[in-house]
Image (cartoon, rainbow, N blue to C red; front, side, top):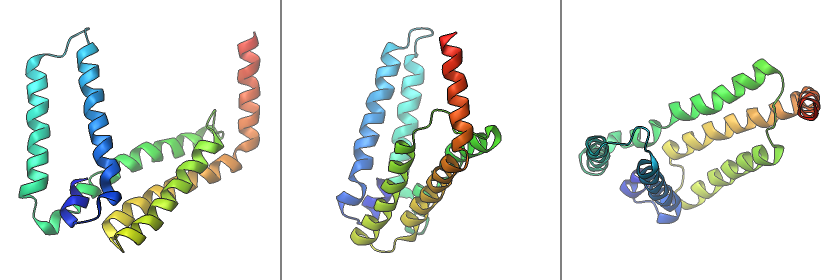
Length: 166
């Protein structure tokens, strides 16, 4: 959301990230409140707040304009790790397990639509588009894997169902 705001993009191009940020904060606070073994200490809460506030301040006020792309590019390794490990696991197992083709397809279609809406609303912002293109490529690989390993997946799920009945 910082990147979109700093670049002067319309809120429709980054507003959902603001909402997700708020949801994540509520989720973290809820987990901290419910965590009792061991409880989260006030020292850890204050440290987390200071780090978060420092990140926000640095991202909004200290980061030079020519380095603002790092606000988005810093997420790419996480995307590569999360989707990449899923892709590699699927390739290793030779089946997709209980993955839903509906979810895979919706992820792929969603990111393709996001690319088109970004071009329409923001233009050819290559920092934004590169992240979405990376996500689209990873989603496409998962989509293709579903069909490549479809018969193996059917066998795996049948064996799993058989084990459940035993």
